[in-house]
Image (cartoon, rainbow over all chains, first blue to last red; front, side, top):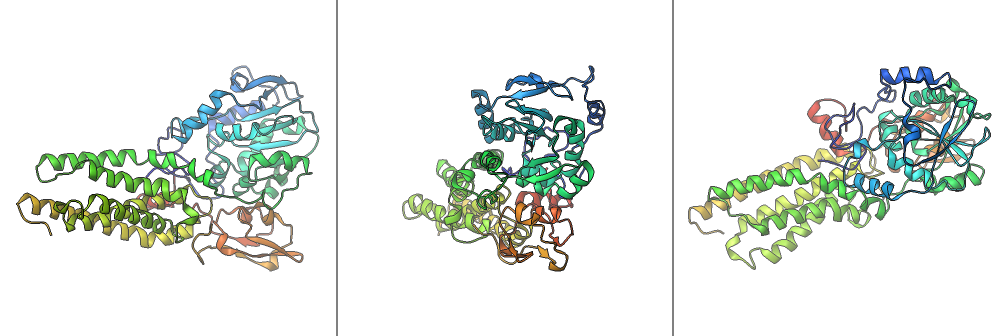
Length: 405
Length: 87
């Protein structure tokens, strides 16, 4: 059930549990991100001097290319060109390898040679997020405040509350931002607004929050346009490419259930009753691809609005195609009972996987997901259970030497 | 792309609105439009209940049941008996 939305299934981070998706808590004022030990580090940072006993690993990162002196101590200067290792790192995350521990040390960073008039951007400490931002900033001079979001991207962390008012207020103090710049405004990614109350930040720190663009690639234009965002820059999309890069995560999540399924079939075969082979595997793998890759890729063109319906429909098309090629017309010994079973089972698998893609999508609401699940989950459970019963009946009929209808 | 119709819990109270425009800036789906010196909901079905508008409304003119539209989260919430939660 791994889904490519916010969290990750192979989580090893301090707070997140086993689950696959976004939110630890959806409550607005979550204090998740601030652990006690960090609080002490901050206390000494607030004086502007990094105490000797607290290792500041920000300068050790391979993408730090220099130091900028400030009244609050030296600040690491970061590269705006990505290295090969950064690209590989992003690719690994897409395939769920080490995804939950791909982080940047929170704190203040410099791009170019900023002074006390330079703009201040705020971002999350997911390394992929940080890379997407810095690669857009070539030729600019500005500051970046990296919040501790536990290695989660801006939007998801804002939903959890870790990219939140509390962390922002605390980080502004921790990096002594009031001593770094003379002005009193900070630019946040627009999607961070889910977790930040701009008026609260102003009240507590004196800094005015300006919401920038949705995408990092527009931030340069936003800055040069006098901080004006177009409607297009303010709108979240879900393009073909956006969807495709998320599908490997969906596939990775199906590996273990698929292995369990194969194990059960193998055991069933050893009893002599079941006779499942590569063709059956093909049917199921096809249904997985239909639900986790094909439907997400074709999302806007697949009829219907509910994700489970879309996936179920593509799964049904696959099931019919698969059965026409391998089923009764070709191999009469397969029988109509098994055919019916596959017509129930394969669309259910696809529908379930596409339903899980709601977590990766950028436009589904919780109320909507709730509504579709009330119908889809019982339907898919019934269909799958019915399919399994039919398969067992079909196997038993053949086992006792009966004729398959 | 549009999700299900008539499900969003978004509500807007024009009497409390000061027309500051914060909701116009933060909404990722352009649900609000300016209407004179206030705003109005233009496309409620586009609302994904992210909660950014309500969170940033200084006069609490907007309310929405914030949540993440994620089926896996709903399933986990169902089994753990808590709120929809992903991890």
